[in-house]
Image (cartoon, rainbow, N blue to C red):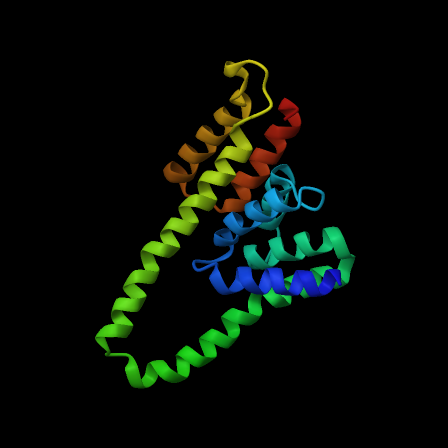
Length: 184
């Protein structure tokens, strides 16, 4: 029964998460609100850190991790396959149809509408990731609500990425080492 639930849940996410793996985050946050025994917002933050550090598509990594929690390895496969199935089916259909309609004004307008929707989903996912990393909702005093060490690390990494343009692994490794040193 868990596998069937995972299948339908992640097939729905795969169908509507336009814009890539990070676009799945708003759907995962919704699941965390509905099923806190399975997922929490904190565990999604951990999942995101693991998913981004592993090779492969972020969405598939997130689905695999989320599917593993309630159902082990079969749950990982079910969630990952369900997440990708709608995209594969839709791409096959679109590729066959697009050849004959690629100059259509309706098709161009449709794709022009998808771009802002994808940007909105990705922005919401990015804001959610920033909130998970830098905000502590359980803080008893308002000025403790911001995780200052994490916020400083975020700003430093953000600036370094745009200034030096090194491989992302360099920044992930540096942030991981800094997290260990600072006890984050």
